[in-house]
Amino acid sequence: MTRKARLTLAALIAVCVLPVVASYLAFYVWPPSGRSNYGTLVTPTPLPDGALATPDGGAFARDDIKGFWTYVVVAPAACDAACQQALYFTRQVRTAQAQEATRVARVWLLTDGGAPDAALLAEHPELVVARAEGPWLEQLDGDTVAQVWLADPRGQVMMRYPAELDPKGMVKDLARLLKYSQVS
Image 1 (cartoon, rainbow, N blue to C red):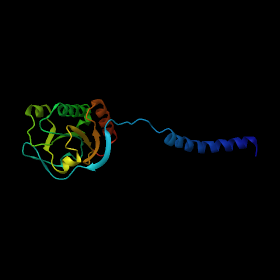
Image 2 (cartoon, rainbow, N blue to C red):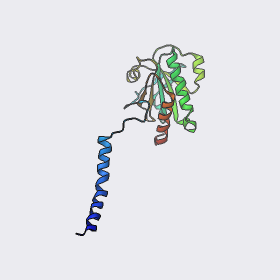
Image 3 (tube, one colour):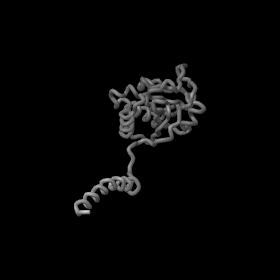
């Protein structure tokens, strides 16, 4: 075999082997150190079936939010500062999505029997309010105050946000999900 033929064979083998070696090194030796989402991904679990009562005497069911990315705020009716901030941030994050805002819904699940403040509800005209009970509270950790969850268009809770909310992180999460989602 001539020297030129050996070099050609070596180059051909290198072209085939180098991508495999590079992918192995990238995956096992230098794994990505960061994450791209702000909220914490959770194992997707469907929201419970069954209708919940709304303060105005109506009913709310999981099927009412199917087809929408939904922020779910779980808090008592006596909405403290953290709850008000969560409601405000979810409203602003939804508004920041511009044309895509129609693909986003917001739900406030009340953890007690109290009545929400009318002035607060007036500030959030498209907010759905319902009284959470039983399985809804168990699944969404209803004992903690002002929890914010994100449910996908199929009605499955898939992300939880920390108590100290960062609206910029929430905007990035939702924008990314709306961009790549084929569901809604």
